[in-house]
Image (cartoon, rainbow, N blue to C red):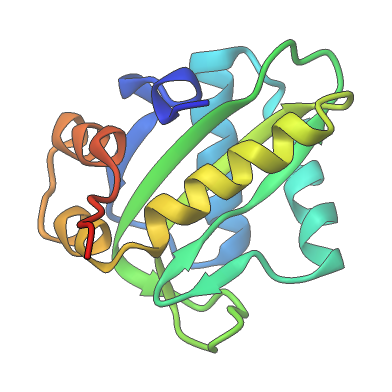
Length: 154
């Protein structure tokens, strides 16, 4: 599985005015509706329900909200870069400015976990995050995410 299978360029945004986790979820749901036909109310509710199980702020300014959605036929993603970090109840208590949401079919099982691991590996890379934070253009952000981390053999 590669990010190109999950994230289309139109589902990547650089945004200015998000003040809360719920507002971020609403913006992610709007992107999911526009690009994948997901009902935004259902998407927000599913993200909020998942968040009750434990925060999806994984640290270092990154959040990986994810949810399973009925009637979805494949795993899809949305990415938002915030110009101002927001409080997110992240594991390291740091505010979040990079959010990659995954929406998966109810029956996705292992595929959902593989997609989550792929996104997590990508956004755990400090070089990837630095490049994302230093660029504004959505197409450039998409290209950075597609390129992913670079590993150097020892």
